[in-house]
Length: 246
Image 1: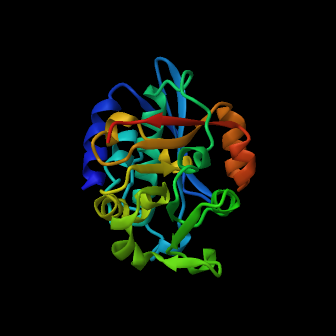
Image 2: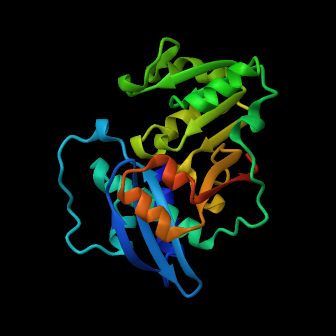
């Protein structure tokens, strides 16, 4: 399972890093780490519709404690764990030479694109370019008239050649299934702020691109996150794309 792989690799890479601050919050849960070369901020999309009970077994927070919860069945613990993995990833990932490419550009030449997680700006841009787009969404609040239930991913993904996957699939535990069912796809992009993973963590999984965001102004980004500002946080970040071998 990808969660366990991420936990093992992130714990190894986290050696020498310290937990500075963290918060389980909307719209993103975030973790701030620090090491000899400075600080890095990792985020994970918070999915309130997945929460059953507001409780957490972590009594003495530390970076290792949060990383150890990435495969927890408790979504609060798991979200903090994934944000911690992303923080460690961002600390070691140099994005200075990585292209600032909109995710739509990666799949615009495909005749059909499967989008996992309704992302209206992306879906709208693809449809404007004449790309046939299938949108799968779990949260009924995010459905529109053309959304498909995420239950249909199992049936339809084996025929997909291009797949855009919201990083929230890592949070809700569906990414393993998606990658398995989409193994015939030529392009599989994990996208969004939650896709801040270090490429070494997902090499060979079937993911061909990581299209994420690097936080440049950490203090202002955290302030915006504390205020619950989605666009404000994005304004302090830079998009980037990592290309992997499938």
